[in-house]
Image (cartoon, rainbow, N blue to C red; front, top):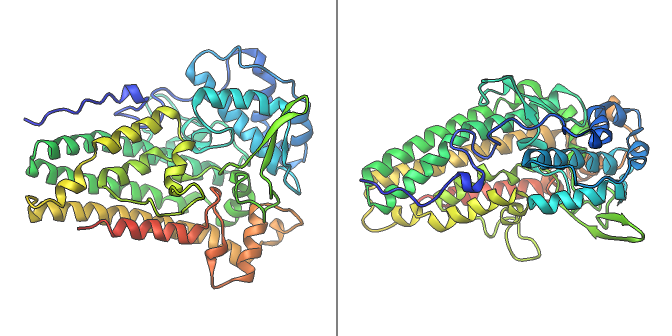
Length: 419
């Protein structure tokens, strides 16, 4: 008999059915009328950005408190709204704004502290807590999903986000599978572990299949020039017009400068579980000044309970050490290597998407409808790619990393985990 692990998914706000997505659908609107002014701007965001009104209207907002936020779903909705308004204010003009007004800074800092998240548009704000569907719909099918809040109002943006939601939903069943596999290794049940590793590979292939549906309804030029600039953070954004980051003004001459990464799929707790489970070490990938890897840094952009789940999984994970032990049979090693190579294939598919949606538009330059004198991540990326057409290494992702070298290094360290 295989012993069960002493771990409760509920304790980490994780679901066996929905994974890191909330058990109930995210709120589409804050229930208390006190927050009506936030919701009005959020509901009209694409139009207000397009007409150039967003900044002036944000500056007219009252400074609201968090006193009327009750449930966690309300805190999440408030965080998502203010994350969108933050990035819309910073990037919603010809040049970026590097001072965030108190009407956004003050409540956002309080809400972020409550949720254990940085005050910006993270993956949680953009994706995990920003979708809706019909009752009983299959969340693993992106055709069933739609957005609550949007920067652009385009189908391209919606498809970009709901593909990730569908991957999160489809990957949920792999969480229990991974815990069962760890328990099987603990019990030295090689036959069971081998079968679970092959099932894990099957599940990863399903995620790759969903990921490659990105091409169906997301135009590369719309993504690169219209949407992607709003996903950018304030870290490593000197070329995009933010050399010092953003000053979070809380009024009365007080506030602080901050530099945060933008929304990135590296902030997906699900994707990071795969590396932890297989024992893939990315500690030297995307080095940052603190000496830890970029992927480790991205855990700070995850909801606190999810971050703690990854820490717990790291303590429990024993798959690689067991597979590389002397007692491991060839079939087990083959199943493990198959899982590693399937994860590598998932990352290859991601690199191909990045090439099509970022590298190629940056190299070719904007179409007439996207040309102009704006300063943002798109124009900065195009300038770099124009200077170095054969070297995409100068392109930065929304998270602030050197894009292609980081992704290739992550893929290669995945491959190197094979035994």
